[in-house]
Length: 503
Ligand code: SF4
Image 1: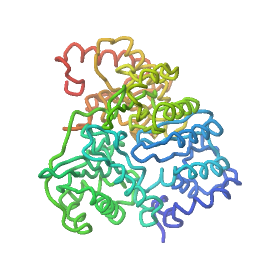
Image 2: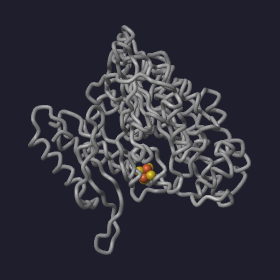
Image 3: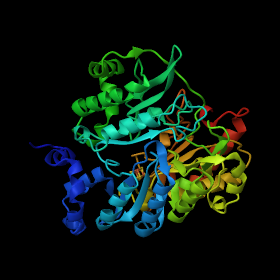
Image 4: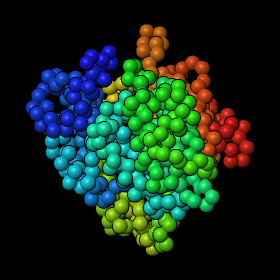
């Protein structure tokens, strides 16, 4: 069978999951001698060719709903120290990446991950990815129910499942019972958000969201979904995607295009054809969006215990720092941490009596619990440090910009989110930022310089809306001045605590 789309050909010729057992043999080859189809299939093992494409990779480790034990954090930190130049990245899907590894390194890394219950399998590739969720699941005083068992059930069903290892593209699931849209519901392929129906607690689901060059907000299915039905609905939507999803042009293979073409009623019929009749209705339980940030010290649902939300600048954390946080989680808490989709970290289970001592620890000088309203709420993608698509550097540039904004506008008084993404793939989600920047390059005179498209006013949560693009592009040399002008205008015009996106 011959396919016009080479990715479809690769997937047809050999299932991506087959690559896992072939890694030792591939590690013996020079990178240039590895079949391009196998380089693609390595994504099914969570191993992704990074920039420059010379035999160095990243390994992405899935942490469903951001759950991480101190023991697991210690292993991740040790692996990053040994193989990843002493650093890790927390991703916007609560995963953790170690960069700069070789396939020979992977032969040691993967079993060591597995030994502590971690997996990189299907962290990348055309498969169900890690499950995004409430990072406070189980300790959240506001959650309608503890979603950890549901997340685990759905995660284990799809993990390495050959029935779903050849989807048209990636498939992103979000499950959260936190009313502040902790799971960024409407930019996922399928998202379950908290709801009630006649006093019963459950979910409503949204399908067909996604960003990239053509962003779509997921649309609501008409069902009230009981906790025991979440897995069946997730399987039904994945099945529709697998069997009816587009497979011709890579940029057009995401579920969002299929949902838009079928219409939400037709998708609902197809779901019920698999699950049987579902209840209708249900009222979403919502509260203002918290941007996926959990900074500071807050009471857990367990009396006398607190969680501590910590800022990690653009998700970039030193292996040594992760090791320290793992040790603190053991010494002060019960050995539990969480990652967030805002690329930050949370320590759980700190007794109220121990909070003060914990916060005296030296590490909080570098990783604060109350960061600036610009630096603490910004997001960037990987950029040209590691990404083959990136025309610009992102992380350091964004930090420099937001640090300048923090210094210039101490009176801002509330978060103002600047997201910088390296290209149209939109990994840093510029469309849902207060100010979203998409990098590229533009000709200025005889030179080609970094330049950005700018969009303003995006947000998730209730009444989610994408940011509005501004005309033209701004050269890097003018970017800081432009951002300052936008912020100044907001400060001049805002009423009381009016957020930026409402202006
Ligand atoms: Fe790479 Fe583009 Fe994604 Fe940034 S947005 S990580 S440059 S693909």
